[in-house]
Image (cartoon, rainbow, N blue to C red; front, side):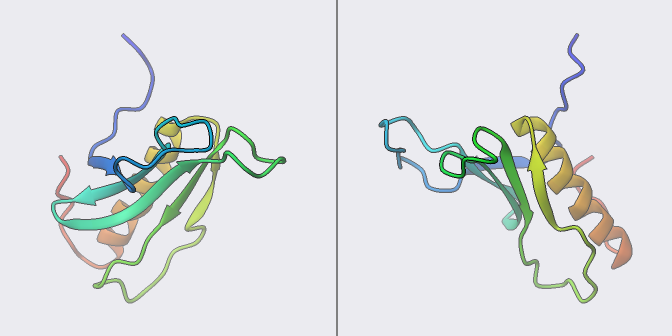
Amino acid sequence: MTNEYQPEYKWRPTWPGETNREGKPLQDFTGFDGEQSFGRIQVDEVTTSKLGMWKWNATHVPWVRKRITPHGGWEATSREACRKVEEHYEKLMELHGRPITSR
């Protein structure tokens, strides 16, 4: 059994079929709750200071009226970046009185 975080929501490639400079698939994913996107993770292949790390960002959700910070950052693995985005999204749902749908 692994201690690696298991995402609660669906994650899909942000740019299906796109490749990086080496011709490998882009490591760039968008999180969805049904049809609503709520965040993005991507591996840094350019910035020298964060090279190989995963950037996470909460994206705009139409019903959000109050923001929570931080709404972005860096993690060592894709799973931890997923965790950060998913936790942020669920905090927003709680703040706005919306039911958490992933569980």
